[in-house]
Image 1: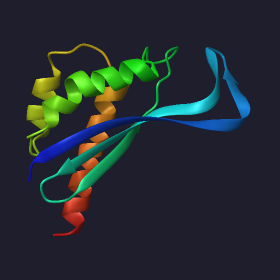
Image 2: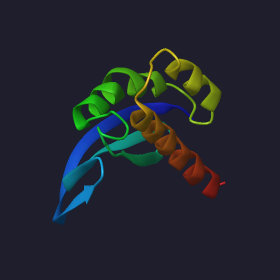
Image 3: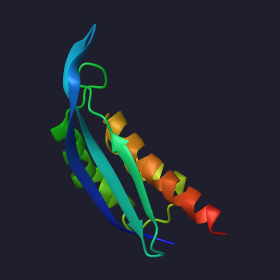
Image 4: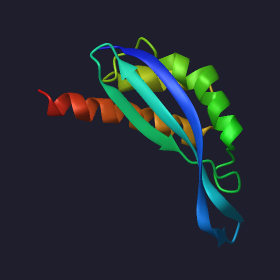
Length: 117
């Protein structure tokens, strides 16, 4: 099984009430949906929530990191080859939310594949 495509899709869901905490506030959930597909027809999904005051990532920075680095790094990769994915990701510093979303989407693929065995 190999990863054939990767998408980073920003979306926004407004909150009924503004969410406020010590380091910031949110009026909407602005996340990035990560969708990875394989040649076996499986799809893995995950979300990357930007929180600039916590993780140091914005919606735009997550999309850029996913489209420029992490997405292309997993295309052609076997979703079970976690070590190779981590080795490829080593060349870039930071972006913990973007990295985690790719890992979660690949984990979603593996869980789905394991269910069908």
